[in-house]
Length: 189
Image 1 (tube, rainbow, N blue to C red):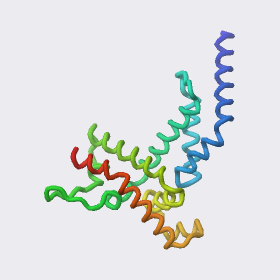
Image 2 (cartoon, rainbow, N blue to C red):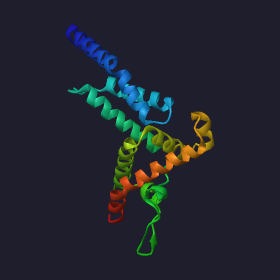
Image 3 (tube, rainbow, N blue to C red):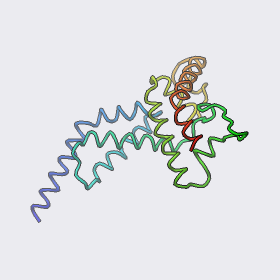
Image 4 (cartoon, rainbow, N blue to C red):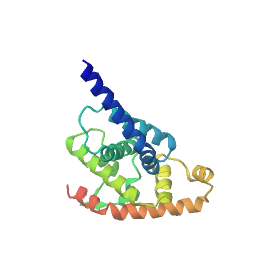
C-alpha cells in the first residue's frame, strides 16, 4: 500500500513539474492560434486536464501536450461555423452540378465518408491558418468563424476597417491557394 502511495505521489510530482516547466509556452502557443483569450484558457485547461488524467506512460510530455493542444484547437474551430467555403474554394461547377460546400463539409447526416472529409478539411484549414501572419489569421477567424463584423473588430483592435478587409482578403487568397489540392481531391472523391 505504501509503495502505491509513493508511486502516486511521484506521478503527481512529475505532472506538476512538467506543467510548471511548459505551461507559459503552451498557453502562448494556444493563444496565438485562437481568436480570444477565453478560448485559449478553455483549451489550455482541457489539455492540462487530459494530461493529468492520462493513465498511459508518455515518453515526450511536451510533444504530447502540443499535439493534444493542436487537436483541441482544431476542435475549437469545428465548434464555430464553417468558414465561407465558397470564398475559399470559389464557385465550382462540375458536369452542370453546383457543389454546395456546406453540404459536403457539414452534411445533415454523418457518414464515415463525410466525417473523414470534414476531418481532412479542418486539419488542412488549421495548417493553412497557421501559415498566415497573425494579423491576417486573427481577422479571418474573427470575421469568418466567429462572425464578428469588421466594424467591431476595428473597435477592438484600433485598426481601420479597410485594413482589416485587406488582411482578410490576403488570408482568403492564401487559403484558396493552399486548399486547392484538397478541393481537387474532394471533387474527384
